[in-house]
View: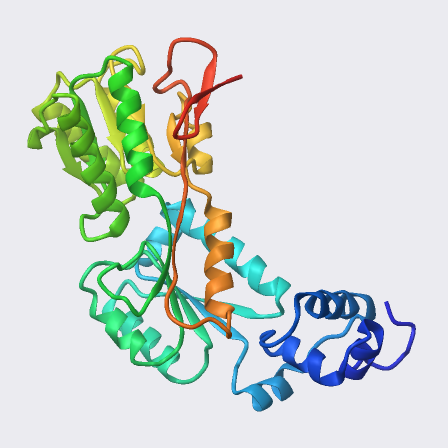
Length: 353
């Protein structure tokens, strides 16, 4: 840290790094045309000198605000009912803070919230948008694109080639979950799907049906119920499924919150988990391990998703769109155990304790 009483300047950083003033300026403004060695030298010098950019001056010089939006296109209650959204936001905010950037949380579940979100983005307040949980055909996406700022989506709206995407391998994760249930001898496998107009809900449901057909099992509509990602919706869906198909012997839920709601209803009906019914969730949120019994589930790499989204939305040198798919992993716990001392599946093999 510099011992100089005055505030460190860009010239102090350049002197410490052994590069020109212009090189430091280019690093601070996105790193375009800077050699990797020089980039690292400048970053070390910034840390050593304690330099902090004057954001107002930099905004005037670059036309960039240093502000980004985390835009959740779900009702406000989803932020509290589904812990995954909070994890994504926290990880993205931490990543932004490391870059001395600001992340603003906006929820756009109601018409008024959507209008205000559109006005905020169009008002020139932000340099980019992290779009979370978009729904197919949502006109808000077109409205955001017309603002001319970079957009990176989680829960990819693949119908629009102007948006970069970062998504977990929902289809592959769901496939492993249902194949696991089949491997445990389950034959009447129900599913509680997420909203069908969301990418995650669609892909997980599609894989469920595909695996059943591949194993000669009927993809019976009476074994399918839809929730809204919330715990209560999982409980309602499970009550419906048991009323229609009391003989079901397994449930694959589209996320852990709905799976926990399903567990409560199953046990309340007098059935035992896993003796009578196996349950598998999706996400590996904190509630999965805290559940009784602990949930077998598909682990999503939330922090990696957030970091990658921030990388893409803040990269001023990138041209065109990028689509990144991040692998998932099956975590086996008591709600759907296997024979032998096995706890994890990485998509290719079982791993011993």
